[in-house]
Amino acid sequence: MFLWDWMQSVLQFFGFNRTAKIMIVGLDNAGKSTLLTMLKTGRAVQFPPTGQARCEEMTIGGLTIQAYDLGGHMTMRRVWLDYFPAVDGIVYIIDSADRERLQESKNELSRIVEDPDIPPVPILILGNKTDKATAIGKEELIMKFGLQCHLNQEARFQEADDDTSQRRKCQLFMCSLLKKNGYGDAFRWLAKATNK
Image (cartoon, rainbow, N blue to C red):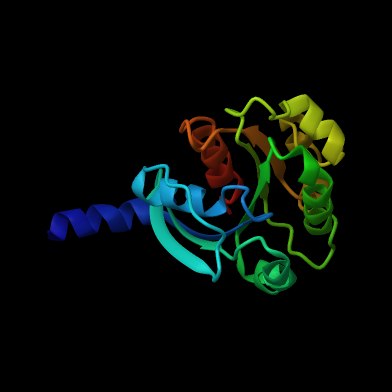
């Protein structure tokens, strides 16, 4: 037991095991609770709308994550901003198959991405439900949400330190939580982006 504890402390010292707080947000029925359960248990479970905030702790690739799901109905959206200063990353989930609510989802995401009072933590955007026939593709989602200027490309991170220090890291990944695909690369990106 001593040897195991010693190895873990050495790994933590060199940054191989860190802790991060993330907040999972998006409109109701986008897949926030399903994502949280998927990350924690590996099972895809569909949930009714979240009535109260949930918090789960899990370890993914050496990163211990405390993840908060605050719900996506209008009442809960009002308190999102209160939680942002305490997190290391934000996960915003879009129901890419719910075409009727894309504008509403865009408005909420824009409010987060463009708010100067929110600390410059990385934002992982997940276009969920790609398994549905009505889902829009990645390029269409980028255009409809006006994300062209927000999404990071590796070249941008090579620029001068004073410029990149103020730029919010932001990336979009398409996924299907029900089919269990697309979110692995997304969380690897988030783990790297939250590395301080």
